[in-house]
Structures are given as C-alpha cells and as structure tokens.
Amino acid sequence: MKYVRVLLMVLAAIVFVAPASQAQGGGGGGRGRGGQMTALMANITLTADQQAKVDSITAAFREQRMALMPAGGGMGGMDSTTRAKMTEMTNKQYDDIRKVLTEEQAKVFDENRKNLPQGRRGGGTGER
Image (cartoon, rainbow, N blue to C red):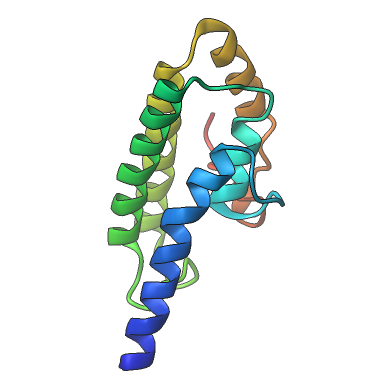
C-alpha cells in the first residue's frame, strides 16, 4: 500500500511539472500528454499572460483526467465510456486553450492539432 502511495505521489509530481515545461518548449518526444502539448504549441510564442492561462487550463483538466483514472493509474484498465469522457475532456481543453490565443496563433494551433497522431498509441484525441 505504501509503495502504491509513493508511486502515485511521484506520478502526480511528474504530471504537474511536465506540462509547464512542455508548454515552454522543454522536454522532448511526442509521446503522452506533455508531448501532445509540445506539438500543439509548436511555432507559437505565448505572452506571460497567455502562458499563465494555458497552464491554468492544463492543470484544471489534468485534475479532471486524474479523477477518471482507474485505481492502478494506467490507461490500460480504462473502459470505453471513460475513454470517451477523456477524449471529450481533451477536446474541451484544446478548445479552451484556443480561446486564449490570438487569431494568428489559433491558425497555427489548429494546424498543429490537425497534425497530431491519431489513435491510442500516438496519443491523438480522435475527433477533430
């Protein structure tokens, strides 16, 4: 039980720190949520105010997704209803982020979003 608690704390720390780093252009790779955010924000320079808003949106949706995760903490044990909710949440998150952007930034964001890999392995969200 203690091992699971420690593992969840480490996972939570990674989940909370990585997206802020990713949104600033840190980190690498195209896997997982952090990689998606990096891909979505490619070639977009945010103002400090925009960055704060995007970070806030990302954190709020991260908490919602964590609440839906199965007890084991992985996506593998998730049923199709929960996966659909996650996809819906991700699409809402992207829509909320888009509202923070200027018209020019939104065009780049839309193009980046269109080019995200589709399906479970690539981390795409399905519907566009």
